[in-house]
Image (tube, rainbow, N blue to C red; front, side, top):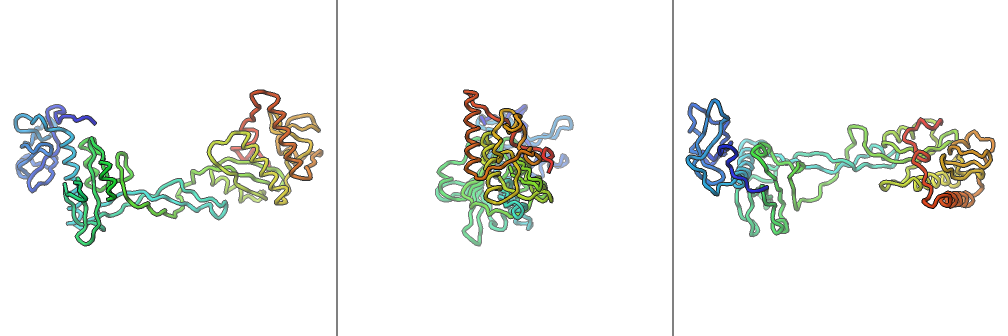
Length: 379
């Protein structure tokens, strides 16, 4: 942010430094005794401020006389940020209240670990850590390790230290970060940002950075809502029909528990997968279920009369038509291969044939192989 002058339409300020070095909000100045909390000084330049308590215009502080040329909004806001953190922390210590620091812990949800062998790490658990448990002293512009901390939180009972840096225009120096001390950097852009600092620090908010903290320990906690994790799963039903379903994980778990399901396996997920690759994984899952696990699969992928189709998934040489994979479940001509080697040879011949039909390569659509709606298969 550029170094904006305080001017902003009449040099009006919301805050001043008052009696006992306290930050004074113009909203707390009593018109009947306007100087009770003063004298007032500018946080940006130290010059005298006077409260303007008009009944027409918004209340504000203003400089007595001309505003000093070097009084900048950056300095004003930076000084207020430091004082706000210090004063709020000290008040928390004096009153026995917490001064929280909001952080996020990675969450591990094992809701579907037993049923599907899947744990979800897509999420975080917010936690509020009370900084008064570790620190009881807050100081402005305190030196540590050859650097000056905007606000230094320390403990009278241990060597615990934490630096709070207020970032208005300049980010924390790399050398200060490299020193290894725990640092929280809070970005401020307006007077309104100061309000949150009275109630604690938020490491999850926009414009906040932190350095040199230990990696948080994951929290094992089940999601309180349907999981947003998606996956692809291969199913075999009592009818012998198969299905590859791409859906939210809770829908896959529900499908697996249905009485018609006799076999289930998750297909590997590694980002976007081309239709040919989905076809290959569907094919391999079918072979594994039938030849290695002895599942009673009835699939046109296994039939010696079948090949890959150009429009539908399968080209049946016995009927001369293209059809779906599960036609085999009711087909009188269904004759599965006797070995996986024969099935793979037929599959590879189909791919070479289709690629030869079109120099660009014939690419099947997702709809040939992947279902996003399990109602498309009558189990």
